Length: 222
Image 1 (cartoon, one colour):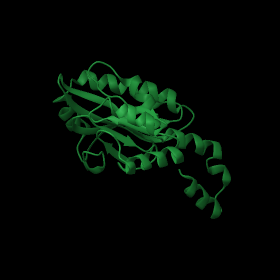
Image 2: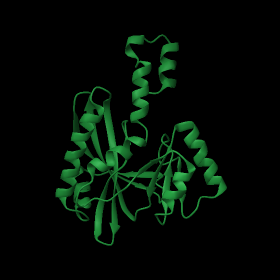
Image 3: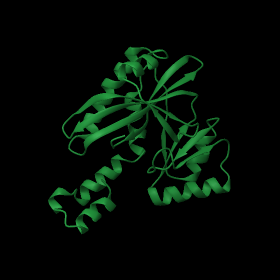
Image 4: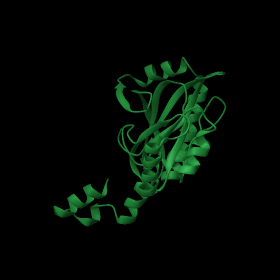
């Protein structure tokens, strides 16, 4: 759903009872923000995982946080397919400060994440019937170093899981999947019906390979 689609259907005679209300649209908009992933990530962290994400509302906060990391990614709350993402190494220049101020002014804040040594992109896909959430499969895809989507790999869940298990234990993937179901149950109850995906990564650090369990949450058929 989007306000533009809702208006188009209404202008062409659609029954208003079949369209989402303004309040429902506001809820869907908030759930579709990258801020959702910032809140979900800490709830999915466990042994064998990696990842931090911050919601910032000023350029000063961006500057202060970037000092703590070698490189970060700044993300606008609403954009698609990896767009609305800006890399930052060191202090932001005036162009990036201007971009950050503009996004904060129009969208309320920016998401800031440390840059991780990614080796593989994947997602866990779910279905919400408005009362509960169930796991429906994996998605294996490729994105560039800035997180911009490139392509999907067509393969069965068994093939994808076998590839993931060559980096991390199946027990870790299973526990992440269970926690996703539990947390999405609470987050989406009564608010969203349809498919959704939680983007994840396999990353390498000094200790070996780990899962970043919540890069983004996509409330759509993806």
